[in-house]
Image (cartoon, rainbow, N blue to C red; front, top):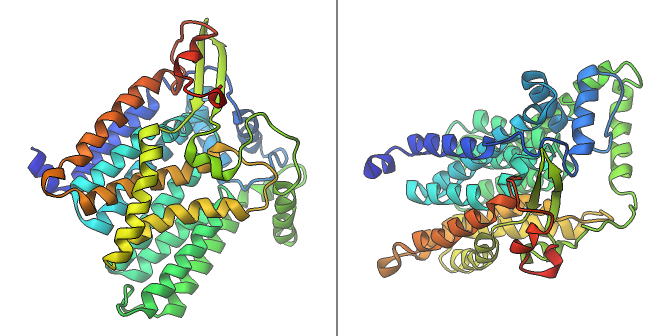
Length: 410
């Protein structure tokens, strides 16, 4: 059976997708009340459904539109708030599989990376919380997969798909903008190097597709705002409104107990308790904390990808490492007065790519099963932390101490 799955990568992807969706949706109703920043985005989604007035205007609309769609589908309850996030989490896992399959064409490598994405813990928590990050991760991951797919043929059509997905990603959070810029740089590199990766599509046309389609998609996501009963958006206000959002996002905010600096995120120095209080008669907790095996092991994998990719002149390996470096470097320059560990969400997904790529490059001979050995502690740690990732019933108010490896985790 396993050999058959190796020959059928997209059947394997389907099975992984089903497993991811079941994992993310299991007991989705807990906690039964709003947690952490759900207090901002769920009310904004409710308001969007009524088209009453602008709510949460510091961010674009796409994530709130999707949360609203979930409420419309399943009702104004925890399942309704979060169901679309579980689909976005599954899409992220499948995006990881697709990226690795397009880069390395090895089903084992692709399945390993996708499994790590399921186990990395940050994706589980974000997929079960009605916030922005899981939607950002889904659209960026799928956009990168579509961009790589466009290198395999029918470049204009597939690049249009990639640009549309990038536009939706920016419509979730402006943090996606550097990825659009990165896609443009990749197009330039791929069209001006020794090999033309988008054969038949001129560079100017490729850049035009990326720019025009992504920008048009982004602005199209504001369509509901034109129908607000109070303070509706107008064409004349569409561009000035972008500056209004910028000012809101860059304003100096008061200190927050969970704030942290970008350079501490890879170290797991300051995770975030999204929820810790009694709910439905028992103590429950949700801690945004990456899987230590993947988060720390992934850093070594990034270094391996960069070194090996450079030495072997292997663009796929080097690009995977560079993706993580760039994703973190962005936060070093973005003018935000406060940083939070959940900003590391996309970078944590790229660590899964780096691990899969590094094992693919070096797990040979006696080390051929090294990735399976690595998976074991990752699985064990996921099971160990699962109660405080999933709002499972805990023994009491002090139960969290069982999982607190460092004082900064409290």
